[in-house]
Length: 152
Image 1 (cartoon, rainbow, N blue to C red):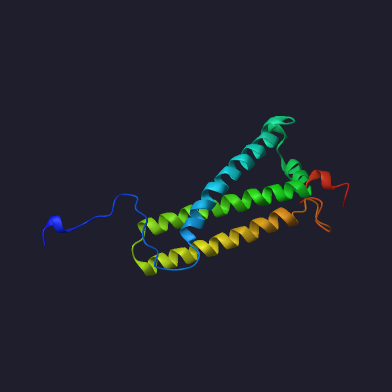
Image 2: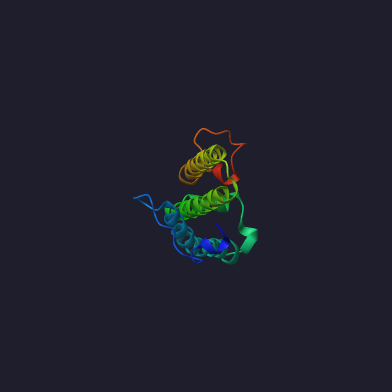
């Protein structure tokens, strides 16, 4: 066999799909583009509200964060920011694992670790955003914020 007998596909020729069903690589690719655009808007909105409105960076303290997290709009805003950023980053890590890890068993272990850590962080972040209470009932007044003294 000589080198003249070998034929190569033209660059960017799509591979023949052998499996039926959802093309998860395409879903991941589309998610990265859509979430990236959404994240740009969410991040710039977050920065504008926190740094440009009001007194700027000097206004950011525990009371400012507690006030924002008491408002359902900002709870959902921060939830979507958390969700899109975390899943976007995890999908990027999944792509890096697929690109650089050649051993299937190691790739499965890393994918499982990535999936579990992403799930744990999403659950914990969601709990913080939706259950945060700056002035918990029955708390020691010395351990809570100064503005809670009137409420306790």
